[in-house]
Length: 297
Image (tube, rainbow, N blue to C red):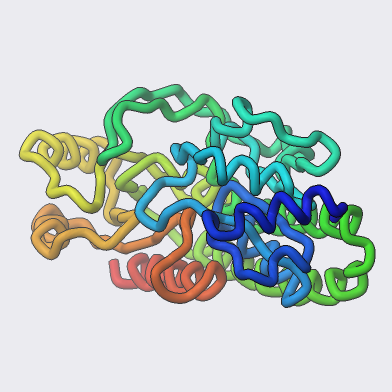
């Protein structure tokens, strides 16, 4: 990092969530938690990872402030999810030589979807873009995203090349284990269709042979009578037997699922940092819960 960017980071250290020592270490900025986790694993104690999205905000709709943008612009590596995940990078002036799209090499693997406009929580009305963008839920693609970050970090911070290479092997092994866990679910016989509380799980379904439909629910809000009626109609249409929540719902909602005849599972897609655990531990637990749901049918 040159002296100019070191000075910039030092000036804004009090307004973004980086440790004081960040001005002495290379910085990797990301636009979602999975990429932040990959960068943290790859860099170990040799880098600081800049991911300042508040815990209660969906990173795909986050609007960074001036201090956030300034810090991101000064980072050694700016790793973006791509696939239309976040819109702010298209409006910010980011240095091309230090900005990397982790799905740039995956164009033939990206899933096209219908654009749907709706309201969701406190974020107001928004649209799901025509490309599904929770790419990391296919853990083979997550490995490729992690490899892209490792390559970018090695290029920008060559002094850490050996440490990054060593950490890369451990991270890839953990992601490969998640992929194997997902494939074991897909290998189960006669899997019934699934309904998800939000259209986040296209890559999970495509990678592991799951037929997943989606409704437009917020797990933090009690579903309305009309929403329950629409779900019952969808279940009758698809034959779904499992429901995936993206966050822990109200107890009453889970009881109603049982009445409808659905086994429900909480499977956080982890666009943002979990309150407990990390990417690998939460995904392991979610895949285990999904497997047990299918086994219990």
